[in-house]
Each structure stands twice: as C-alpha cells, then as structure tokens.
Image (cartoon, rainbow, N blue to C red; front, side):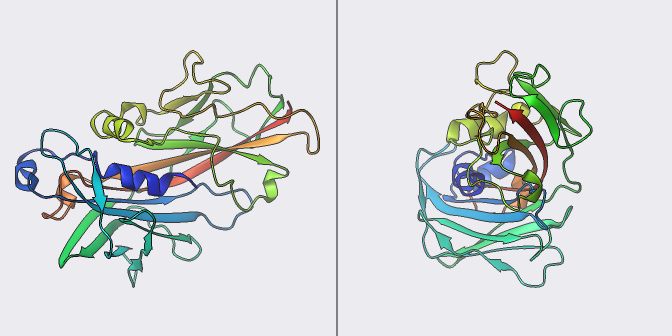
Amino acid sequence: MRFPIHLAAALAVVALGTGCDVITRANNKTVMAATLLVSPKPPAATAQGVVASVFVGQHDGGLSSPPKTVAGLAGAQVTVTWDGLATPIALPATAPTGNYSAVWTTADKAYAPGATYTFTAVVGGETYTARVMAPATAPDLQLASYTLYPVNFGTWGDSNFTAPFPVRRTGNAVAFLSTYSVTGNVGTATSLPAGPTCTNLPQDAAGLLDLVFNDGDWATPTFNLPKAALAEAGASPRFDAPCFPRPAAAGSPNYVNYVVGLTEVAKSSTGQLSGNLSIFSAALVGTSDAKVITVSQP
C-alpha cells in the first residue's frame, strides 16, 4: 500500500508545535516522523496488514517556516512498542536514507485500540521518542444510505451510483480514504492491489501543512468521492485521482469491485515528543474500515 512511508517522510517537514515548547525546541535540528497504520481488511482475509514507518533526519530550516530540505540519517536503531507488547519491534532501514519500516499482520501482533504507541530512534548517541495514543474505537464507514454490503449497481452509469459518490462515518477524527479496484470474486480476496485508484492522503509538504494547520478537509463526517473526474461539482478536495474509473468493456469477468477504505488516525501533541526533537516532528497511529461497491456492467 502506498501511504505509510511517503507520509512519514513528508510529515517531517510540517508538524509544528505551539507555545513555550516551540522556543525550547527552536534550535533542535533532528526531526522524527512516525506512522503506524492498519490497512483495510479484504473480505476473505483473516487479518489486516500493519505498516510501521519512521523517518529520522536533520532539517535546515528555522522557526519561522518549515525547512526546505530534510537530510535522512543513516545508522539509527529504530523500534516501536505499545502498552502490553512484551518486546519492541525493530524497524530496519529502507530506502531512501533515513527511512525505517516493518510490515506485519494483526494475526502476528494485534492492534491495540486506546494504547500508547512509542516510537524510539537511537542515533549519534542520542535517543529520540515520539508517543501517541491510538484511537479507542475503529472507524465505521457507511456508503451513503446503504446498509447491505457489497452495494451492487447494475451498471457503472446507474443513477444511484452518483458523481460524486458520498460516504459517511461516525465522528470526525482526521481520516484518509483510498479506493481499490478488484476484479473477480471480491468475496475470496485475501489482499488488495498495491496501489489505490485514488486517495486523499497528503503526498507533498503543501498538503501536509494544510493537514497540520487546517485539517478540516480530513476531519469531516462526510466525504464526496470523485467518481470519474476531480472537477465534479461537490466533490471533496484533496483526492489525487478519480476513485471509480469506468470498467473496461464487458468481458470475463464482466463486473468490477471497488473496495473503499477509511483510515482514522490520532496525531501526537508536542508534549508527546522528547525534548531533543525539532518542532517539525510528529506521530500518527490509526486503523481502518472498508466497504465494497460492485458494478456489474461498464
């Protein structure tokens, strides 16, 4: 899945603190951006995938604006742990320099709602930590007024399959949505495609600045997913592509399934970061829900 490592690296340049702690941290150059995200569960899977990613680096910026560059630090010893876990999980180095990550499933190590997750990096004789309390409940994704899943549309152009297509949820925590196109019998799917058809996960510093300073586009109970074009009237902003591309001409199989995944996250506060970290540091932890839309004919 596309989101975790890119998000961790980009977060390093945008997560600002506030108050007196900003002054204390003004000269700190080491940044740490950490994520632990649980992926949506395919219908036939027995567990969900988990990706933990940490970026450790040093920035060239001052206090007045986010840094323009962040150089990744090699050789860090990075782990993640949480309440009730007996042994911290090591996150090996990955490309590019400064990135550390590991992948497992909830069958191996269960996600712990409401637990405090602690990310630790030891590099250059210094120990850096970022903590965040995971959401206490899983998200609840609803596809408009539908209560039976998967939602079945006879054709892609069905008038009920509107453009944009609304999805709702309980609450308004910061959330990311992604859709995946799955051909064949989705009921037997045990994994999702490597890349989504669309996502509203920030992919650059400008988008992440908005997430940190004005998260309203991600903290709403209703999202209107662009069906075929980003410019559809009423479509929610931030999506990188249409979410439900028209299926190819009828063939075998002559239907397509769209898996809609919602990931809700909790964000760390400045007080949950060790005092030697830059104010441009943050941690996110969250889990997912998913629903399926089936289109029988193009």
